[in-house]
Image 1 (cartoon, rainbow, N blue to C red):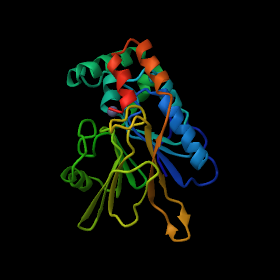
Image 2: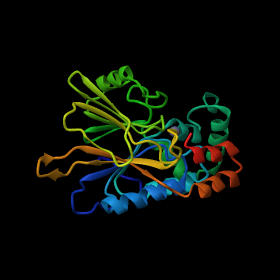
Image 3: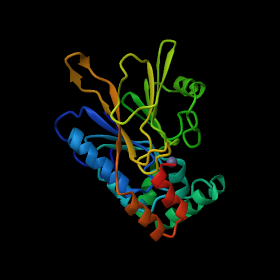
Length: 269
Ligand code: ZN
């Protein structure tokens, strides 16, 4: 069970949840987040617990609405990404490209006091049951783009949990290690990966609000760990969801943010 709660501290339902929603890189895209939550509820029922791997703001036009929607989810464990840190002035926008810097400065001006305080208090790495949650990687939570086997192995050595949920690359992806075998999984939408054979598994649910794998649909994943006839499960299912891209683009343009941030949503880059 996740150990910390959303700041609004909803009361947990009495029944034990057997699914956790995995989100990353929402990037202030409210329409994409709402579509993901709707798709999740259609498939799995009410949300019981959520892990959010950072970059909830930056790039998109609805930072406060996205943070309010995340805060309203029960049992939401959330970490800080580089765009979140920039939006509260903890890291310099000189480390960003000009478009990202402009969006970070705009986000900083928009954030409500409540939401700025919430972001400032987020950890950059958090352990939740048997999963480590971070944005980039366990060894460099703010900046590392975790893409290669050597990076996966270096980070796996640093954590005491078998699982890790991360983001930052905006690509749905999983590494899984069982003995000497390492699997690289580039999942299709709807693909379910059984994690029981593996000692270590790292999962990137992909980006809710700004996918970069050429598929513009919002990306998320679900971890299922309830018992079935073969014992207790441990599986991740990846999903892609269509959403109202043109409304998200209108929010970006209405905010006066760089038009390329709106355009890229149509092409998933
Ligand atoms: Zn991001």
